[in-house]
Length: 116
Image (tube, rainbow, N blue to C red; front, side, top):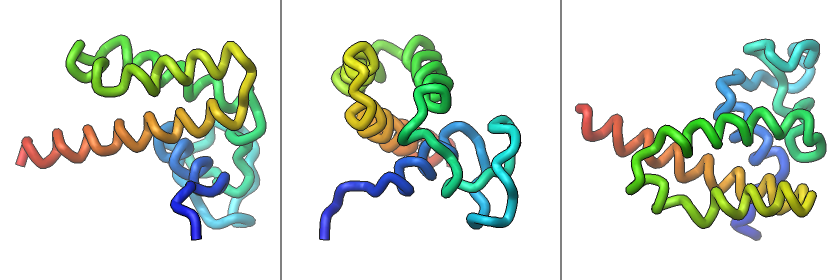
């Protein structure tokens, strides 16, 4: 059994990162991608640059607004995302985006724990 995330797990993590609410497949039609309720089973982050580029835009905003210390923590992954986009390497791009999201979620947990 592999520890590698599945396409579905990466799509779901990206949907949550983008503040979309995953619902069971078949419950709602995809319709407008901006809808707050979409099925992760229908999302195409893993196969559509059109779906993935807004994710990169959000990551870039987070990167730009992060402290230098935070930027250093994730610089290798952030630069890898940029390079894979330039190389049109879709699978590697989504894998690095997933790594960024995992780091970002851990940072949010740390910040929440420190606030308590």
